[in-house]
Amino acid sequence: MEREGVFEPETLEAAREAYESVGPAAKTAVRETATAMDFDREEYRDRVTGDVVETARDAIFASLLVVRVADRDAFESWREEADADVTTLGSPDVDRVVWHVAPAADTAVAATFQAEREAAVATLRRQAFGRVYRDRL
Image 1 (cartoon, rainbow, N blue to C red):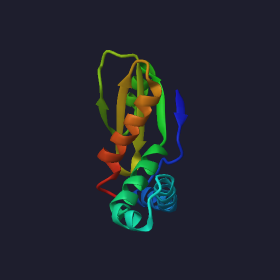
Image 2 (tube, one colour; image 1 turned 90 degrees about the vertical axis):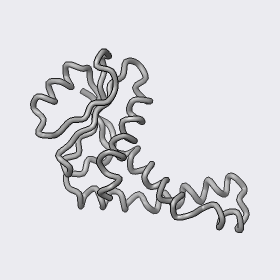
Image 3 (spheres, rainbow, N blue to C red; image 1 turned 120 degrees about the vertical axis):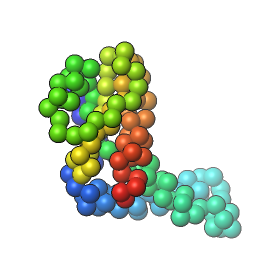
Image 4 (cartoon, rainbow, N blue to C red; image 1 turned 45 degrees about the vertical axis):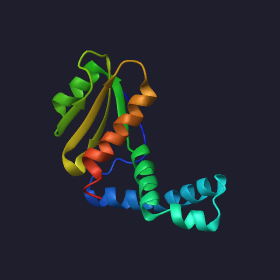
């Protein structure tokens, strides 16, 4: 089993702290992107809203969530031992699984995939954010 990522909050408070910690990076990323797009001051003021920065924060936080990647047998072994409600997305007929465990919510989100590991990891992180963290943060 492989593990990658930075954030694996054990509590809701730890999740909030991690989420807050990426706020400055989100602001900087949005500002630098707007500069690269040659926004003048007026266009920046009109288009770069709090919602835009919040979306960047959501995406950065989600992209840093710890995930585990393994074959289906390893996932099923983990699942038998897990003390979490597991939601699995995707086809049951493929060989690989990526999952994120959220102890703060007593849940895990998993997605199956065959070959496109990076796409599966990115999709799973967005799903985990939406299903586990968005409403809690």
